[in-house]
Image 1 (cartoon, rainbow, N blue to C red):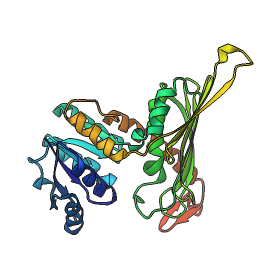
Image 2 (cartoon, one colour):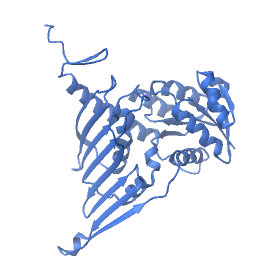
Image 3 (cartoon, one colour):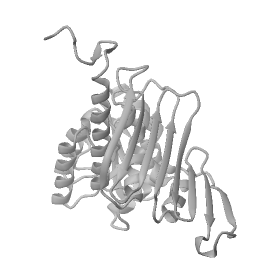
Image 4 (cartoon, rainbow, N blue to C red):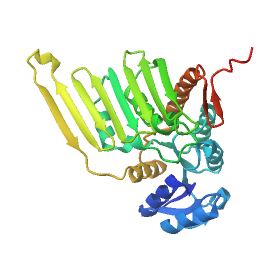
Length: 328
């Protein structure tokens, strides 16, 4: 029996608690949140106890989901690792690369599992992509979402684009050569829409657009490689594989293959994978190192975006971008 807890009873924390409560061989010991009312609400739904202090579950659990705001990931996970608790940390792994490095080091020192919650890796359309992509030359990504008044403590790169950054880094076996990026705040004081162009040393180029202010949702990754085009529609859970045998000459037929995947509970699958990793039955799908690489790339993209914003005279709420031209 693996004893678990959920730290953070917000939007995602509620779902983590529900999934653990459904699993055989898992005992959800408690839900922890600074708000007792929120913790009680989620705990009642999951049939467990509510706590307001993480130390109320330490010593009684083997593993935990860290589903608090990003700025608190490091603080919470450090406490858990220090007390021998395996951690599933929602993406991004932490607020800074230094924090990620410390968590990775602490988990390794203690012999503990650190898995990062990049949920899209459990999408069946992405699994097909991973199986079919061998030598990507060009990647086009659109991740568009309607505005939701949550997760606005981070920008769209750390909120949405980071999903695709982690996937691309897993697909392209080459160091990055160049990053170009633009983005602007629209409805919040953080960047709400962004585009990044990644150029790898092996010649592969990836173009990514992420928006959280669109009218229609879209989560699509398209990969072009010699003799094949593979499209993963993550929202509709559909795949398109178009192939042509280049060795067969100019008359070779183009063969499209369409796949529609059955509905799966990706979060449940992700947490089952985490529990199995804790049991020593498999390796984490997204390790701390993979989460760190995605975070670093996201932060590098944000740095390029801020360089562009600083050439503008722009004011959003109480946040100002650009140089004050009245100063000497």
